[in-house]
Image 1: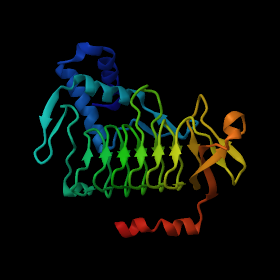
Image 2 (image 1 turned 135 degrees about the vertical axis):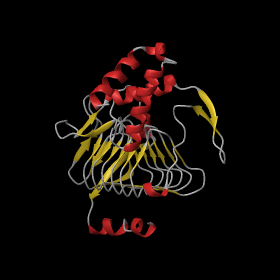
Image 3 (image 1 turned 30 degrees about the vertical axis):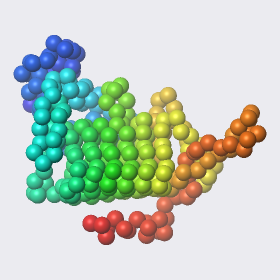
Image 4 (image 1 turned 180 degrees about the vertical axis):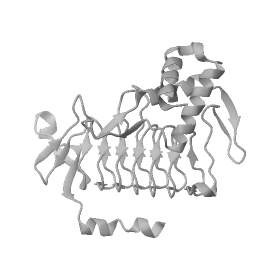
Length: 281
């Protein structure tokens, strides 16, 4: 069916609440949406130059994902590994022809997630429903790609990196990492943060909606607003830093709080340090 027809059906069945449980037509609409998500022809968020952030959230797609949880019943699955989960969201399987490299060792990709050709998954890692991971991206050990997160081309998610997900509220923007972003080990990117192309997050950097980012190069402070999420500029190199507390007992005790700091913008030396990714492939 056409995308507009699928959208109207998903919105109808989502609005019906618990009444859709056991409805084969609702299940058929959900399965079509899930297949489109896995094929990458449908996304929970997609580039849109007309939007202030450059991205548009497709709230009805998130409604469809939530519909799948409503329709699902628990079932046991798996042979080598045992799972008990909603039957509407089994673990994905891949063929060699799809070109996705999933290294053995406890990794899992949930149904409804898209992985493009030449994505590499190092164990153990996890990709949740609605996520979109584009070509050439590396998802390293213990990394998490949350529900509906949008990951661009040639991104490197280093060991233990956490990319937060969001299903509700359905109109909320997911975390977005644009093309060629390098995310260091033990980083966390949450609450709809957008990281623009070629930015580098050094190990241990945490980005949230409530986190101000101090740009020492341009002398500005980057913050989320009521209308837009936190946005890390293109080519920015962000490290984990701190700022002193100037008032009260905290000042008296010499305390400081964590803050991300942009220390430079990406240059040839930064690119040289990122060539390790090519060797890994």
